[in-house]
Each structure stands twice: as C-alpha cells, then as structure tokens.
Length: 364
Image 1 (cartoon, helix red, strand yellow):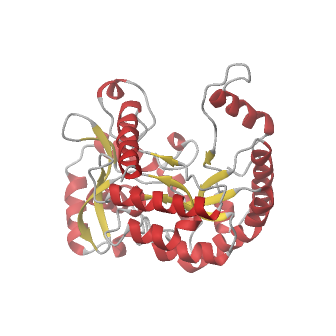
Image 2 (cartoon, rainbow, N blue to C red; image 1 turned 45 degrees about the vertical axis):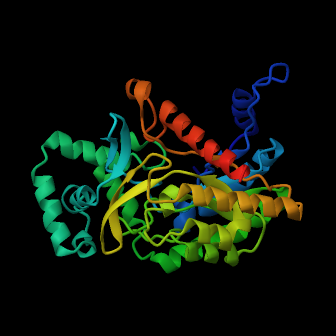
C-alpha cells in the first residue's frame, strides 16, 4: 500500500499465471484485485501526494503488462469485517459469518471504543454485554483476531491500541468529507487510467453499513451513481459485489444492473443470508452461491443482457469478468491451510453452479 508496483514483480506474477511463451497455461491475468488505496489517500493526510503518484506509476506499469481492469476499495481501516471465519453450516462445511451481537460486544467491551455505546440500541447493548460475559479469554481473543483479519497488510501484528490509533485518524472525517476525498482521488487517477486504456472499478463496503464509528460511502446504488457521476469517464467504474451489497435488504441487483450496467467492469457473484435487522444493521452468514437472499439467476440474466447490449454497441469490453468469490469450505478444504473465505473446493462448486446458470440463460 502506497508503494509502486515494480514492472519486474508484475511480470513475475503474470508469468506464474500465464506460463512461459513456449508452454502457456491457458490462463490470462485480466483483473488486478486490488491495487490498494492507502489510508493516507483516504484521509488526505501525511504522504498522500506521494502515494497518489505511486498509484499512477503502478497504473502505468500494469497497463504496460497488458492488464486492463483494476479493482480497489475506499473502505476506512478495514477491508472487510467478519466475527467468525469458520462458522459451521449444514452439511459439515464452514463459512464466514458476521454476528452483530458479537461485533457489538467486541466494540463495546474488548476494543472499548469511545462513543461506541451511542451506536447501538439498549437491547443490543444488553445482548452484547451478556455475550461477552459468557466468553472466556481465549474466545474473546479469537473474536478480536477474526475482526482484525480484515485489516490490510499484516493484520497479525495489529494490537487493539493499533486499531484505536487507526480509527483515531478518522476523527472529524464524516461521510461527506470521505466522499470528497474519494472524488479528489478519482479526479487525479481516472484521467491517467483513461489515457492508458484502463478501467478502474470500486468495490463496495463490506458490510454495507457503518461499523466502529467509521463512515461508509460505497454501500448503495445511490452511492455508486454518485461515484460514477462525480468523475464521468469509461475508466471510472464499478465492481458489483452481490455478496457485499446484498446484505442490505433494499438491494435490488436487477435494478442496479439496469441503472448502472454500462459502468460495471468487474463482478463478484457471492451470496449471503441475513438475519433480523437492528437499525439498518444485521447479522449475516455467507451462503452457498445459489442459496442466499440475492436472486443469482435474475442477477446473471441481467448481466448477460448488459453484455449483449455492449456487444451490439461494439464495445471491446463487452465480456464482464466474473469471479465466484467466497464459498463454503468443503471436504478437503477443511484440512488445508487457506485464506479465510477462499476455499478451493467450495469456490469450484460455486463457479460450476454459476457457469451452469450462465449456460442455461444462454439457451433461453
């Protein structure tokens, strides 16, 4: 974060994926996820000017390597937040889960954030206090580790004091100011990306509601309409993540694609199951790809219609890159080391299901 991605390192990774010229793997590297935006850029403090210059240098180096789609996010401090990285699901697998009561307990009683009590209704505060009181020290430590796992970089080395310090950098930065900082960043990097033929695409907040007193500005369809409207350019676009946005019961994926489809450069097709809402927030579990609250068949049908529209227009980017993103850990996934949320068998299952939907929609 904040550093230039060197040409040699980009070439090395590209070779790992695509293989040498005399023995190609059949794979291509089409999307960078993510070229991270530093906290200095998000807060427009410290070395943010140097970090923006480094970001632009990295864009030049990626373009030279032939990689056209660059995903990023503008989430303050945390890239994503879960309270359980291996929650058991029916059938014996595991999934990532966000439990609002556990999270409130961490915020109120483990992190002990100033002002946290104002962010939760009394009934939820009582539930959180009882939940934390019932945990032993090892369970509380595991909860804290799970939550800081979404910190970019070497999260294993973050202490609670480090987290408090990171949150403190956002004192005085509300949603209006953070959105202005995002627009200022885009005003500098989008023209560079457009000149290079790149497509930037912003990933939504995960989860799409306020946590730890931090502002959220990329959580709804309206947020995305404001984002692409602030710096109009084919290089200023969207990562549509149905798993992140779908935690909000107001999210309508078909309406989203209908309204903002031309700006979608990259898609995460994953799913979640929500539980009871508490003032716009909820617990949720990452579901099987076709089994959550988001109608994945309708979403895929809308995206394929957008691809057809682009092809008819003659757009060279008419094929929208997709990944199944997270999945349940299944079978041998349970015995192998892995990054949370990225099992081999579970994601292959999801990819097969999604490709099956695409094949069915293509024939309809």
